[in-house]
Structures are given as structure tokens and as C-alpha cells.
Length: 120
Image (cartoon, rainbow, N blue to C red; front, side, top):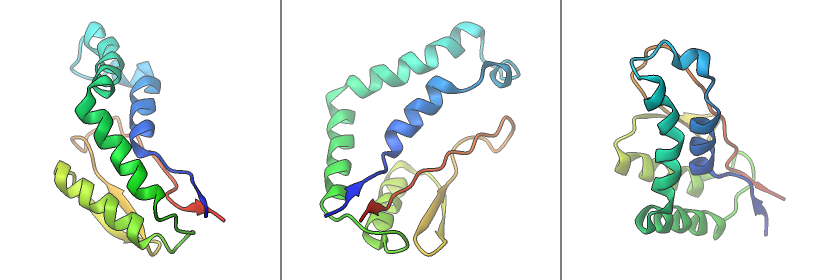
């Protein structure tokens, strides 16, 4: 059984914590609001509903580890969750890949990449 190496929720939270300040300076947020973004997302993860949702998805994905270019079930789960969240996406990319689109489409742009295959 492989070890799953993908956690998109953690990546999203890390993105919020590590987003470079110079790019955010061009946004319509005040400096105080920008500083509060990571705190908000970290506080959200403490709520039992979100925590249980994240753990549930993680467990579901770990029950069926799939090797590279064979992640059909994993890709299906990711697409279902994106559908539930109302997040548009492009599929397939490189056989099983999913590309989600979050934001306004205006700069600054940030790209996140996550592997969703298990290790043999």
C-alpha cells in the first residue's frame, strides 16, 4: 500500500501564510486586513465542521492510493469536492490531473501545484 503525498487543504493554507507582501500591496485590502487573512484561515481549520471535512477527505483518499497517471478515483474525489465548493476546473490534464480556478482572474496570479499520486 502506498503512502499518499497530497494534501491540497494544507497547501491552500500555506499559500495564505506565505503569499508575498509586495504583490498584496497592490490589492484593495488594507495592511491590517492582509495580516488577518492567515489568522482567519487558521481559525477556520479549528472549527469541527471544517476539520472533520478535511479528515474525511484525507481518509477517503488514503483508502485507495493510486500510482502516477492512474489516480482516477482520486481525481474523481477532487472534482466532486470542487463541484460542491462551486470551484470551476479543467479536466483532464496529463490523464488524471485537475486544474482548479480560484480568484478573480486578475493579477496578482499565484499557481499552486500538488501531487495526488501515492508512492509505490
